[in-house]
Image (tube, rainbow, N blue to C red; front, side, top):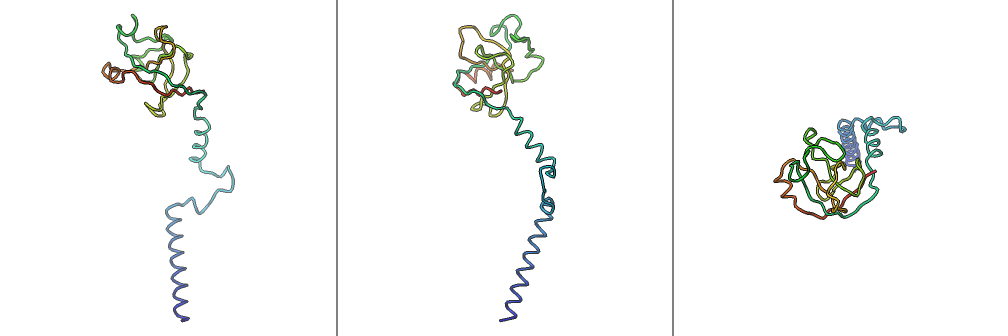
Length: 157
């Protein structure tokens, strides 16, 4: 009986030592746990800073959203230049929206359509479209495929 209990104890200690060795080899930071905020690794601090600087939603609303392109028949005689003076064709990024009910420069998200992507209000629509938003797209086929949708708009600070 004494032999069996010594064997069990030795085996248990060996398993514990092996597990700890494997854990420390896999996660070297576990051996030196941080004592205070100043001791956290840079990656953790950067993550905390990013979370603190993430845009905050100040208003949420449902809006009818359409899409447009830089074509004279869809805009005016300067199809690449928005009402705020932004050059869509030079930037060539699908991150611009037209909206009459938000100020130029306002940042918005359309989470149901594009997740966390942030758009900037840089253009205006015809005055008859008061509570509607228009997404700028490079390709006419993509804009036609988008159609008319009612989406949640998150206005960011």
